[in-house]
Structure formats: C-alpha cells, structure tokens
Length: 215
Image (cartoon, rainbow, N blue to C red; front, side, top):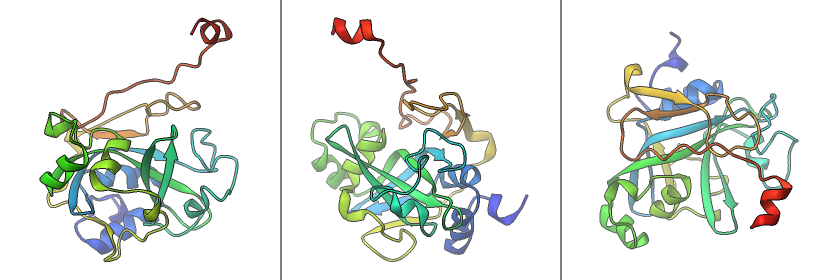
C-alpha cells in the first residue's frame, strides 16, 4: 500500500491523496470533515468521476467549459454546480492538473453546528437527514456558488480536513453511482456501510416517448 492509498492522517497526507487517482481519493475522503458556515459534516458517502478519461457520467467528459473549468485545475479545490434549477452540489477536485477528475460529496453526518444546520433545514425531522444527499449536504453547510474554486485545504470559509478516526476498509462499501445517465454500473460510489446518513440508491431510468407522453 502506497502513502497515497492510506486513509489521510494529516493535511499533507490528504493533499497527497487528492493529487492521486480519483478512485482511491474518493475512498479516502470517507470520514474526512468538511466545515462551512458554522457547520461541520463528517463525510459518509462519495462518488468518483474520472473526467475526460472515458467516463461519460462526468461533467468534464466532453472537455473544458466555463462551468467545469475548476475541474481541470489543482487538486483540493471545490467544484460547485447548480442542478435541477434549485440545488447546489460540491465536489473535491483530484488528480494532476488537466485530468479533470473530481469526487462528489454525497452525504454526511453533522458533527458540529447542529443548531445552525437545523435552522437552515427546518423541515427536517431527523438529524440523520440533515446532510443525507448532495443537495442537503450543501444546504446544511450553507454552500453555494461562492464556494466555487476555493482551496479546501486552506484556512478559508470552506475547509476539508482529515478524519479524526480513519474509516477501516472493512466498513467501506462500494456500488454504482446514483442517477447518472452514462456508465450506470461503474462501482465508483463509496459509503460507510450501515451509516444512517447514506442516501438511497436510485439508478437512472431514461423515459421513453410513450412514458413522456403519458405524464
């Protein structure tokens, strides 16, 4: 096992991990902590996206655009995008510059600033649902377009830090990514097995003409 494959024990190890391939980086992000807006979340579910390297599910699959430009930059920066006209999602850029790989942070456990997270999501009844899903995670943390391009390893408004206790290999599960329109069965979603904050799996099912007309 190389240094970059180990769960990150400090900030330098985390930087090394993110500078490497996206799949081990995704697995290594489990248990890490993301802080923003007075809230800290322990990451419990992630998805890896390999950019232009044959991954049709990636936002960078067809090349660089104004939206995905940060994915082509340095590892450890935030790629934030808007989806469904109402939700923000946050990714951590990985790999060497130019490869455009990134890890979507899908879910987490609120471990700090619980009252602030509850105030941002007043309709949520259970604590485990506060950051259960990528849009909910951003809502709990107060992350929006202003986080785009931030260095998450610096002492800025959004900070990514190593796990207090690394997640052992035996506690990690892997499976297909959620709701993607391409590469449906690539097992690049990683989560802490049995953790109640992990989101539900939904495979993308394209609508046929008949289904669309029946709506």
